[in-house]
Image (cartoon, rainbow, N blue to C red; front, side, top):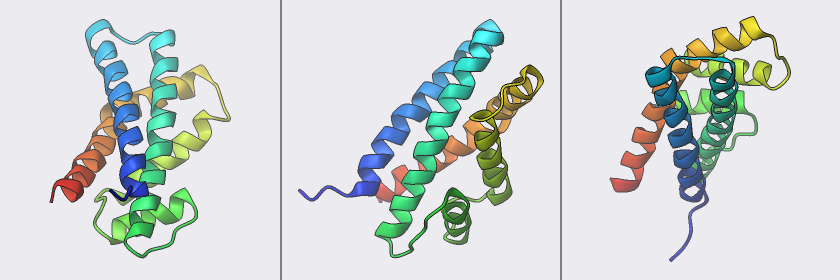
Length: 135
């Protein structure tokens, strides 16, 4: 059996997305505090990294070369792989800031965006790619 890179990467993305959703569920059940915020942001960073790299590999498998997260997001939007292009760009920018800045106010705002927007659109990507695999 030939192993397809984007499918291999997708399996890792699914695990990271599951971790993100588990942290979000803990927050929903227990409320948010500093520790949960840090766990949520870390899980988000990992899920986003694997998401854009999965998109990149998927696009390359289908003949479109990309080299940056922004380019991969734009191409994925053009290919109807994702539908909320601006929110993906916002998510990418939030991801870039979380790895370089730690201010409690920013972390709290980003946590709310992760909970209210980003978990949903990452899960939308997972469903879309799962559909690509299962036909």
